[in-house]
Length: 154
Image 1 (cartoon, rainbow, N blue to C red):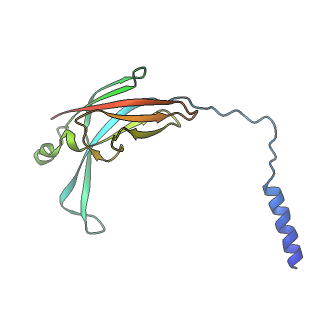
Image 2 (cartoon, rainbow, N blue to C red):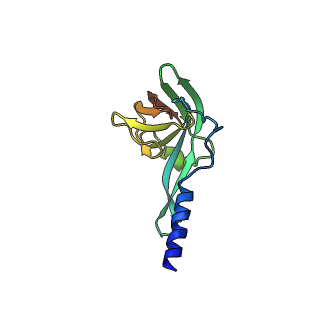
Image 3 (cartoon, rainbow, N blue to C red):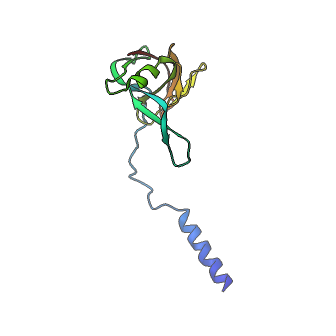
């Protein structure tokens, strides 16, 4: 019985290591885009008396209104302009500042992005009072260093 199980296991392993497709395979695109296409910003703060399931104060996140966006692919610069929307309470409006914004950007398909020269990670609260640099690497390996700057009006 053990020999039969062994033979069946060998047969299954042999079949799993082969492929039926040997020709007429389509060529998949090698994406060469390493660009930033748009940007977003949010304000995060702790809610007053709101508790989440763990009993901790809930973190509330509200999106800022983008009022301008200038993306220059040749110079690899992205200038984003935001303002505090009118639906923010006075306390929320007073808490928003350029030193504690969450910024995120859209990039080319299949590209990856990483901070350089001490820039903060995107998607976490950070100081945006000065521009930051990020490396965008396309799927084909081409890279471009982008400079992202943010301005905020209340």
